[in-house]
Amino acid sequence: MSFWTPRIEHSTKPRYLAIADALAQDIRDRVLLPGDRLPPQRRLAEALGIDFTTVSRGYTEALKRGLVESHVGRGTFVRAPKAVLSDADDRRAQEYDQTMNAPPEPTDPELLDRMRDGLRAVSANLVPLLRYQSPTGGEQDKEAASSWLSIRGMVPNLDRIGVTPGAHATMLAVLCTLARPGDTVLCEEITYAGLKGIAAKMGLNLVGLPMDGQGILPCALTQAIAAHQPKALYLNPTLHNPTTLTIPHARRLEIAEVVNRHGLPLIEDDAYGFIPPDAPAPLATSAPEHTWHIGGLAKCIGAGLRLAYTVAPNNRAAFAMESALRATSVMSSPMNTALATRWVLDGTADQIRRFIRTETAARQEMAAELLSDSVFQTNEHAFNIWLRLPDGVSTVAVLTAMSNTKLGLVPFDAFAAGARPSAHLRVCLGGPASRDELRRNLLELSNRIWEIHSGAA
Image (cartoon, rainbow, N blue to C red; front, side, top):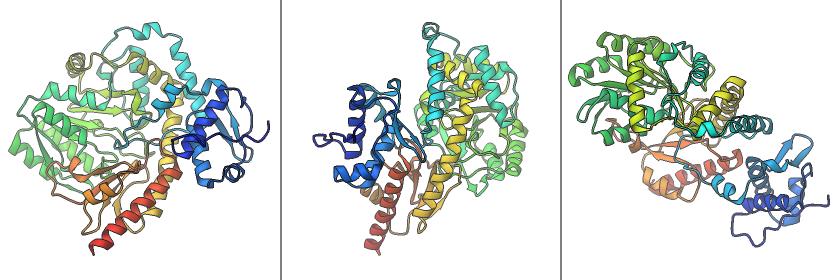
């Protein structure tokens, strides 16, 4: 074909989105055909009279939409029509809650093809998947869950496993079986914001436990049990959200000993446990008779599935959880459950997990480079950093200065459960943003912090 030039002059959108939109339209109009090679990015930038970065973002956006595929050394090519998004799908693709701590999204064309293949295979059995089904998944889904949980060294009986509608809904259901309004639940002094929301709705009293660099203090746990007679303990022990710390094996054994000694129900939120290649064994392996282990799929596969692989302490507890889920959520989506089962069994889920791990490490390296003047806690496998602002710089000032960017920033207050106030921000590195977009936003953050700090000095 002749040199392709997108028509973007009348678009009201940012130019990089206008390029992707024009590409989609020209594919629909068959101006571009599958296999057509797009112009080199620098040549197109010169033809349009815009900077190279804008064109690069446009091509990256087209790649995310499935319009094109890129091959190192060969160039960028139009994909088959099946991957073209409709206008409605295009609008949906732009919807995203940037405050959520999400994994980076797959961009590898071969991996995306595998994911779509799984969706097509599941859709062949569409009508049965629209029926009401078990609140906690069928036997084949529990078998897939068992296979996935084995990555974390867990081999529970199937009657203890539930395929549940996401970690958040599962926590709500479990707490409904354990606690009543006015009861106390223990947690980290800096804890998952979703737990705070659930506790507020249920009228529960959250008591945060002091932490050091290895997690909650076992002695503080013992004291809190005596003082508060809690109904449960909630922990997020691997890549803790938001501080990114991981409780080491020795500390886990100490915590498990206290849990076992007092018979305290433990809700183990293992949302990030599948990401590191060498994460310590779950607390559930040391306190199986008291632990509700929630292996959410949001962080290691995708939040849109709204699924978790949950292990109850015993089959009676599993039955109680199923009853609570029936009341609060009815069931997990059978369509999503079937898709997750297929991806787990055919290896696609593991490929997604490995992509997330690799891409996350690259983004962490970028953050370390661009925020080298800042102080923050992090881990190479975490989706965020826990940024401490300089003296004189408030979280409100930074959030206001960054309000026009798409960088996910969440202040300390959202996670505080007894901890002293602190000028910390959770800075999210994942989600749909490309590396180039993340780089620009992190540079903006660094510059804004410097600007505010200089003005306050």
